[in-house]
View (cartoon, rainbow, N blue to C red):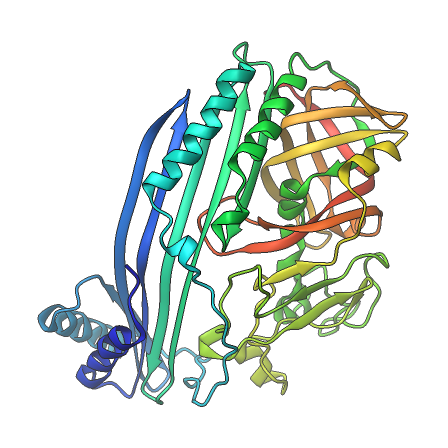
Length: 451
């Protein structure tokens, strides 16, 4: 059960009244995190966690310290406050510590906790598992899946009078199917869905099972540069590799792909990507559930980061904005992220490809060079060779070395956007709207024979 606004207010007010420091900030986080896991045609785990915590940050001048407690009775709060106040007095001055954000802040209001997600329980998840495993058995594959639910409240208050409250809920369905001989694997899923009726477990299971069957006994082909079609999940992971480069401080200090030729210069206003690459944060997007509350309690606002390949905005945190005499952005580049899509389906992308690869999943992506955005990763769970507009068969996986800075100049087709987590985990905030992408000259460096 999620905490109400009044309950959070009572807790944060109590902490503010008990603290004697120069300035105080209280952050509340709590709710339900639950999930159902299944494998080999049966549920293996039903998980549920009801947790809550309060983080207390106190300040004496430029000194600050934080402590967290999960107990909200008076004695527990007093012990935590005494400890963090004593710690803060011993801390060195932090020259980058900014004053607390003051009210009023105008937060966009939208409903991010629909009843279908809030009430999404183990019985409904079990029905999804039954539907999924029935299909797996019928098709002769082994299914392993994860259905996480998140029903959460974030709140904060500070001694300047600011108070924030945001309740959100969503769920995901993720499935990997494997053939009994362990030579074929297929992935499908939908993540970060606010309305549960938009999760079609049967459709997703059919996709993953068929992909596993079709990917059996892949043959090896030579590494090299290929036209690749990234389905939405690998497209979302690939997109996430460039968003951190939108940090203004890193760019101005010469530590980023967005750095200019001279120290202090950036690529703001420069055409860095192709005409068909547009990226923005849409606070209040009806599909995405991220918060309207930005950095330190600032009101988040919609921002266009890249428009038709041109860098339009960089993220300024409060310290760097103050130093550079600019307004803080509030919205971070990963909030309510939307990449503009197109109308080309994956099937149409395949038909228009003379020779290329259909990629189902990226795994174990790691950075190589942040100045060029070069990253390395591997394909998994279904990699297929395309020749003359048709899939001609499965091929062994590859390790790839590539940079979004190059690829987003080589987009030849985009599909409709779908919600998909950009990070490795499926049960944290971070869902974006991302299209399938067709990219030219993508570098596959070596064969990775694992299925």
